[in-house]
Length: 359
Image 1 (cartoon, rainbow, N blue to C red):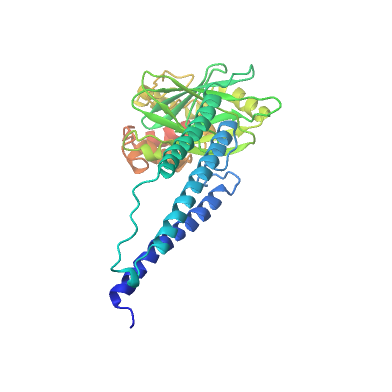
Image 2 (image 1 turned 90 degrees about the vertical axis):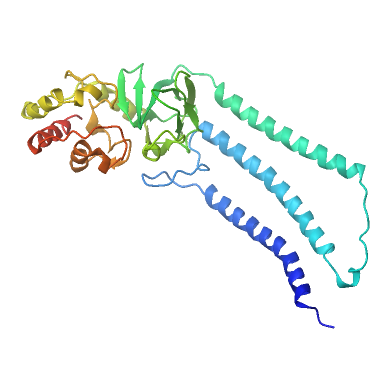
C-alpha cells in the first residue's frame, strides 16, 4: 500500500528541520570566512572587526575566534544529536500503534548536561576576563601620547594636553613600533549625553558618559586611515557622528603637530571674511586663534582646512560644501544643532574665502 499524503508531509517536515539547520550552518561558516579575510584600510571601506591593526583589537579578535569556535562546536554537537534523534525516532507506520519506550531519567546524562555547560561558561568567562584585564590595566610607557576625547552632539573634540593642540573629528596618532611602542591613551569625556567611541580595527567600544571619565588605548602597527563612529545612540544625527583616525609615521605625526601649533596665516585680502566671523554668531560657538572667537560649543576652526571632512565626516571639506554647511546645515546633517547663518551672498562668500585660508 502506498504512503498517504499525510505520511509524506510528516516525513518532509521531519527532514526539513535538519536541512534548514545545515544550510544555516554553511551560510554562517561562509560569512565568518568572508569577515575574517584581511583587507587594507580604505577611505570608503566598511570597517572589519576581524581585520585588527592594533594590540587591543588583536586581543579582541583572538577572543572572538575562541568564543566562535567554542559556540560553533556546541552548535555542531547539539545539531548532530538533534538530527540523529529526528531521523532515528521519526514516526513509522509499523510502530504507529506501539507506545515508545519510557525513560524515567539518567543520573549520568543529567550530570553531563549540568556540568558541561558550567565548564563551558567558566572557560569563556576566564578567557574574557583575561582580555579585559590586559586591555584595561595596560601600563603607560614614557613614550605614550595622551589625548582627551570629548563627545558632543554630534561631533568629536580632540585635545592633546602635552602638545597644546585642539582639533575635531579627525584624530592623528603615531604608528607604534612593537620594539619601541608609542601607544595613544585616550581619556573619554562627554559634554552632553552618552556616546561611544569605536574604531573597530584599532580597539573595542568604550562609552563616554557625562561626569564619569573613561579610558582606552590603541597602538596601531601600520600607517593609514581607519574609520569608526559613535556606537551609542545619542540623538538625531547619531548615525553621522563619524570618526577618522589617521595613523602617521613618527616624522609625519611630529610635522602635523608643529603645523597645528602654528597660528593661522593672516591674509589681509580676506580681512572682510574675518570681520564677518567676528561680528556674527559664529564666534559664540567656534574658536580661531588670533580672533576674538573663543567658543567651545562647536569645533575649533583654527586649522579647519587641514581636515578632509566637515560636519564630523558627513561631507568632504570643499568650498562648495563649506558654503552649504554655513548657509543651511540641515541640507548636510539634519538636526546637527548648528544654526543656519542666513548670511547675504557677499558676506557668505567672504567668510568662506577666509575659512579657506585656515590651514
